[in-house]
Image (cartoon, rainbow, N blue to C red; front, side, top):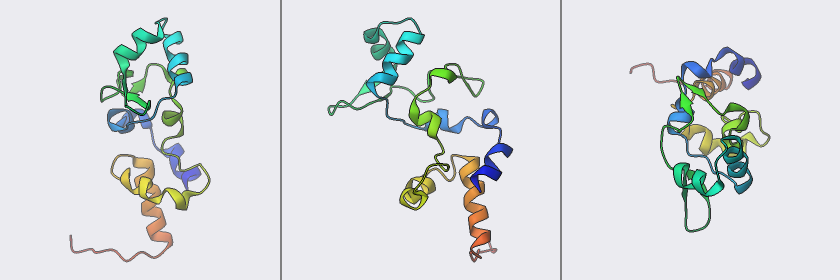
Length: 129
């Protein structure tokens, strides 16, 4: 379903993931992007990242610093979590149902896949609302 639906969605007309999604950032990803931006890693971290006490890193601002006109300005150097989203192409879909439903209203691809799943499984809908 993802393979049929995803190409029909123009992500740059939406951009909701970049406006509201928190992705984990690895040291190597931060190194890569800071290098691309010609910044020291220290400057990059201070300007763009928030670090948790456990060492995990996320962007320090939403929407993402690198979103302009619903397009990623660092697309070739974006983080792995950004590349994977909405992750419907990854194996073990059933193990990620909670996350998928969390993003149901955020992502038109997820929304349409779930709606098609409902139809395929003869999900009974309440048509009174």
